[in-house]
Image (cartoon, rainbow, N blue to C red; front, side, top):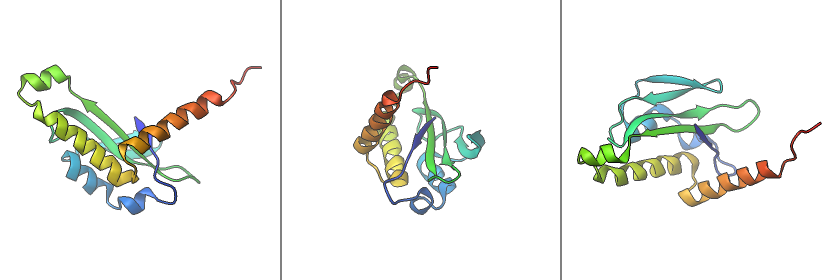
Amino acid sequence: MKEYKMRRGEYLEERVPEMADTVEEYFGEITGTEEFKGSDLFVVEDPKNPVFERIVAGTVSYSGKKDKLGVEFEERPAEEVIAEGNADAAADAVDAKNDFLLEATGRDAKSRRDSMKRAVEDDADKPDNVS
């Protein structure tokens, strides 16, 4: 599961007031929920794009901190998708993921990558707790 933060000064509930509707609009009918860090995220077991096997997405709430977007995209093997004649769906899947993440976070793919790189670098700079 990946977690995405919003742009400075923005909040997920303001950007996406109806998370369930937004998830269904991009990926298909919600078939259930799944717990992640104490929050219930929406599950799409049969996404409308054949590249996706399953999608979990929703708001991860933190006490005293800004909520984050939690998302897990489970994709089918490329060979399987191509063999079924759905190669064109791959580009649509990438667009759907990027458009959903941009709408929810206000960050494009480049700024999301840069933010994740900084988070990894910050973790690497922290000293290990060795006694």
